Length: 467
Figure (cartoon, rainbow, N blue to C red):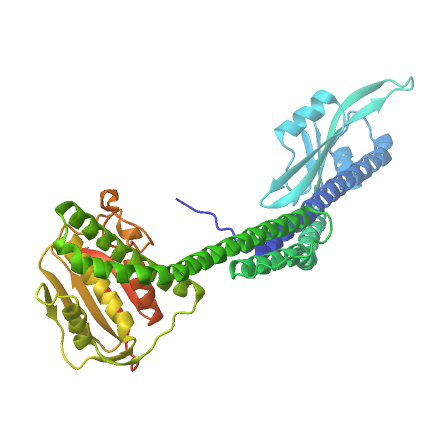
């Protein structure tokens, strides 16, 4: 299917449209003028020729005798001159070189109408005007009767056609001369239209880049000025909404940080009490021992939640910093598992002598979260595989459980997100993976989640400084 090409740029489209309208208008006007002038030229030439033929015939007809003989016809033809044919019944007088262009249609019209008839014809590319007229005899009383003599005079209209062609070329030249002027006017018009459009584009780009103070000054009272006012109002509304949102976010972060900070002291006291309670729980009655164990569990969970909230508040406030040192990645992974008693439950595959400059504590937090989740929600065996390349070090944690559902994958790193509402009271706070991701990004790396053929997979990528 044929597709029409149309330029995409607004400037080009304005130029093309303006030029087309101007050129077509100039061409239409020029062609109309040329057509009118051509008609006038042909009509003038035809009138002039017919008047000349009639005058020549009138000058000689009083000297003719009726009925005329061959000599009279020859004299009449010579008086008219040019390419002329004179007929009377069976008599005929014509130039030996003159073309017989009087058509049967023309002759019939001359005989039946009994008046002068003119006809334009073209033969072999040459235009001709054929004038046919009967000669009448006027009686003393003014009565006119046909004499039977018919005169057909042929005239070449080549000169008239050349004049018409000249008018046509002039019309084309006029249209061509209008094109540069049309382009110039189009450039001026496009500039006046596109200048405010460019300002609006620049304002929109600044707004998209985060500069909510960007505005455009409206000029005039046209549609572009109304659009500018609308965009300014939109930017003002967005700026107001963003300011309110920032205040709300700052208040929320401050609230979480303040609450977490205020809870640390009572929780420290409560933790000490729980530790004492744990040492005496074995000597309690079964019901009391069960309540004590529940209090101990919930207290530890609350402590972890407060610690996670404080960590999140530091990330949000931008006060979380790295304490980097040279760390043996394989040794750090094994130390993390050993400290939590997981070394016998996890298969570790890690080459030695992979040394990175990173924050050992934050790496420990990431690995503990990933392995802990795999042990709680996945299935054995749980594997930790460390690999290295020129650009990065990868720590991959996989399990053999059911894997992550497709609807969970986009939200697995969201704060407080839990895939199963029935596990709302799990030991985790719902912040572990979010904190792990923030720690990975703090190192300039990334943390991704996905599935393998046999379970869930989390991959931590840390950049190498020498890459």
